[in-house]
Length: 558
Image (cartoon, rainbow, N blue to C red):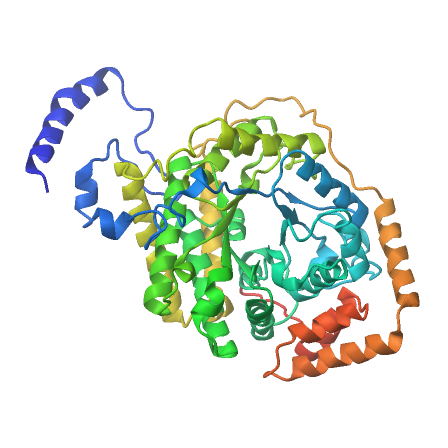
């Protein structure tokens, strides 16, 4: 350690800082990040040296192990992130119109939202689905709806991300079949299915089947895509939902990577294949909050940790297997219904954090999303935020511009250390699946959410318009409402599809799905694909799997 620097710091504290504080005391006794890390007044090389930090081992170069500075050597100088706004609502026609609008104003990739019935394996005419058809995403009961969504959209030239989990195979089958009907082979399709069922048990709760068959379902999709769809990301391992439920940054990283470890282990054992066959197409999904430097540190730490996990735990040889490629969405939970225009400022800072942290794809939440589905005006503004950051701000002109900052490097190490401790605990419990059964991540997130809200209620965490600078006025924002005719339109088309199809073919195909589900040695994806090709509905396929695997009810203690 540089003794001269230490001595100079002591002198500076005594001669400069102490005198200054007598006249101008600091605003708070203690400054904390959202993680609860105490932030000191100043960071110097001594803070890094005390942790054994060295440039090559801790930082390295972009595009090289451990990828702390980014997964590509030139990052955004040559390859901008994908502007991918999450969208989809109502009927297939509504979503098709919104997709075309987004592309016309500069979006470079599609991100598809599905309604709750689709996510839970229910057709829109199911009585349990009745009031939710088209509400939080597009209704997708059949191949016909997918064909309408992608009318006049070039499926061979656009990357499509689909936020779907418990019914991911059914929905991807629809996408594949629509593309092939237009002469686009599955081998050239580019996109992502979320397909992350573990985070559903932990945070989001949109699961159908028990954990074991659900893991089989997810890994069968990964194995199928590795063999048949080399450009497709077969899973998006998601920390976003942990953050939205209340997880701290270190928890978000740790639980996400622990989920990823579980998936990799399952695929290797079930598929009897090397990690380098499928790992290059694993992708991740994180949130970005407003505490800018902590979020940048989070992304950098996650990237470095994943490289170490793949190299040291799974013996990956292909550098692409060690690259943590991730999509980022600004934090929906931080949007406020009060003074909604302030959300534009929040999401711009959050988007900047994602870019400085090295994201490959980005969604900026619209300012009106605390009130309703976003309007066209609001989504265009969100795209413009990304475009200003990309083309006007200059933050993309050099790779990892915050790299080497004493504070950012120290905070990156701090987040990483805290995340490793959580992962080590999960390993001792027996892995993530066992940890979920024991309720560990669920309880930790619930505790963190409670502690965060207590700090908000006390005013320790300021939220403009809520506990600071609040205003009595009701926000005047034009909200988007889903046309009540959506349900009728979708249900009518579903009835026509059922009356026009060859029922014997459908029943035979569904029987094939049933037999495949009963046989642990069989990959179910081709059988689901064939059923969808025969015009079986999403609900019909899901019902067969329910009959074989059952449904999951979380223990009351979780």
